[in-house]
Image (cartoon, rainbow over all chains, first blue to last red; front, top):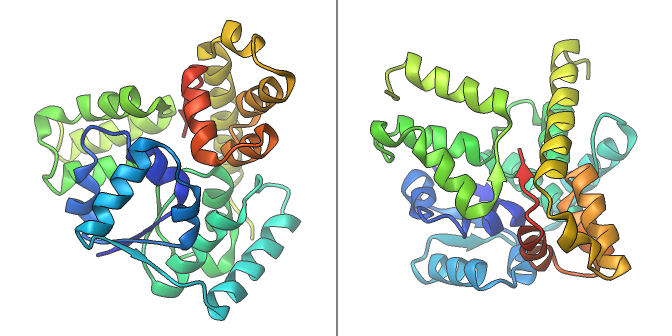
Length: 181
Length: 78
């Protein structure tokens, strides 16, 4: 199943030595034009270019139906003090995920909390790197022997650390299901 | 929408833990040598974890700011 991704996720993921996991897991990545405008680093440009060249990245047009959802989400986020700042690119990713009924990849705290709180987004699956790596282990894309080292590799390559409790919970879940030794 | 108190507490705890991790790992020598605008943006990122807001403060694209926060040894936590 394809997946929608926002800029921060792609910027981080592009630095990961095993970034091929994403396409192996989801097949196709849907983004908005924002990503193309925002990427500047060699890592991200090279990664996005390679995805476009291999027909694995689809740039979805920003239509009026997407904009209507974005305006609704923005209006909701502004009014709820529990939701940290969410900017347009992340809102467009959430709106695309909702319209296309596809999971959304984002690390943005505001976007993740908006998805938890907004009644319309109740069915939307929002994933960060930790959940993507967990899925990759469950799907057998990452070997069971690498089930702890893969999280360390991601942290080293991207300087992205996972909250201790969440990581422990993911590892315990994987062990309980026999996906991790 | 009403959400369980436990989840709200978990979010607060995650925010606190993330802030502490960013403060702990940050290269304060590097940060303190930066021009005021860049320094303010890095400190804002340490305190909030808001990459996009920090990039705007620094007058950079989000990707450029990401490179800067890596140079400053500030992890993204999440």
